[in-house]
Length: 144
Image (tube, rainbow, N blue to C red; front, side):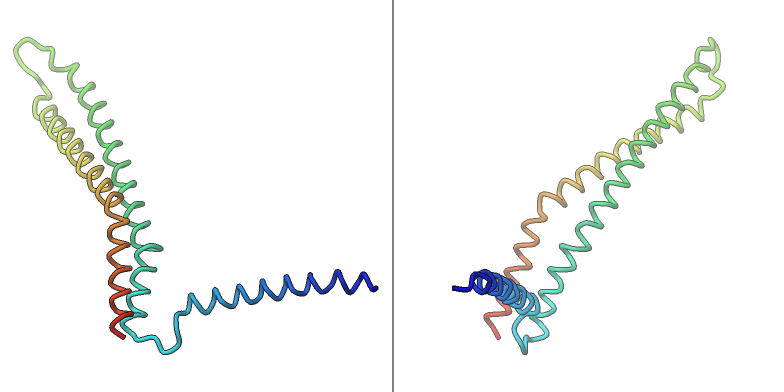
């Protein structure tokens, strides 16, 4: 019995099965031949949302949150600097600037809260949005 032949046959079968598996994946990703434009558009909407829109929205919100945090810290440092001049008995030389900084701090804190809530909602409803798009795709597939 030729042992070399016995070793080559299983190796060839493994390679062949891997090639068939890859071919099946490519056909599945491409979708069925003659797919309607509506179904293809639904597939692309899902792909674009999951691969581009959602990650971009998260990155932008993370950047805005970091900027809001930096603004809060800046306003807090400014307040600490300005408050040392409000210790005069009869006047506060930087009253206008102090009030402007306090209002900026409140605005930055509110902005941060809103951004964190927006990010939370985006992440919370991501799966629901994906499921809705998948259901729309399934409805289109059934109608054609």
